[in-house]
Length: 116
Length: 109
Image (cartoon, rainbow over all chains, first blue to last red):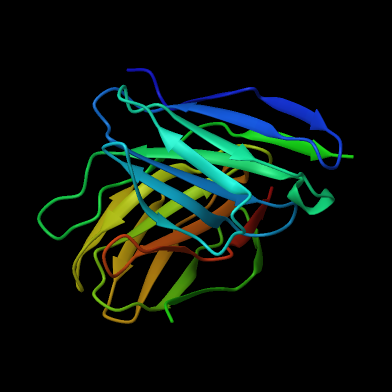
């Protein structure tokens, strides 16, 4: 069974540019999560999509946005890039939550973004 | 505010020297406690899911336990290939997820 895939694997941008990162979840999963992991830091929760709707977002400015498509794949968009946006961006997917329990998130390999 | 604290931040063990990693949390309405392993530059790899206090899960040299306030990841007779950063994730009130900052484990041959 194919795991979570992300593209591209690496990306170099300059400050002020815009970037789009893509994520394909495990087949059958309806929830997609995005995280930012800056070098040497922990995973910071960015966004959570389920069934095409944004369910929650972390403490990030509005220039971080995304969407989930009918096939449950997702995009993360970052506008007006800043140097501190350089990080590993991780996508995870899970089954939709049910019965009061959260489902296990399975992570992709990440996209390494460098902003110069 | 939901908080997740992992300790120690770093741990250096001799091969075969057993130890435990801690994940303590203040999360309202815990809906799941998840352990992951992360190698440098890669995505986290799922290890265990725990839902209820008293629950235990085992896999090879690893055993995860859960109480109402904390979870432990016990590593028995570790090998160098167990070297990685171990992360815990709490899912609390509806749609809230919080990762701990991790414990970086180094196992020396």
